Image (cartoon, rainbow, N blue to C red):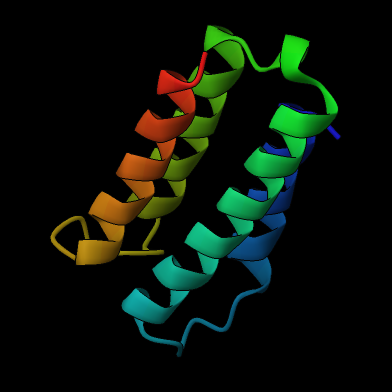
Length: 91
C-alpha cells in the first residue's frame, strides 16, 4: 500500500458513495477511510511517508471536499484537515 493507492481508494470511495447520504455522513466515512489507510501506510512503509506523500494526501482530501463529500463549514472538514496536519506533524 502507498499513498497512490490511498488516493485511488479515495477516488473510488467518492464515486461509489451514495449521493443521497448527508455530506456530514460522507465526511465521517471519508475520515475513517483516510485515517485507516494513512495509519497503515505509516506503519508499513514509514520511509515512504515523506512530505510529498503527505501533500498528495492533503490534496486528495481537498479534492474530495471540493467535489461535495463535505461542506467546508462542517466540523468534518476540520476533522479531515486535522488528520492531514497530524500526519504531517509525525514526519
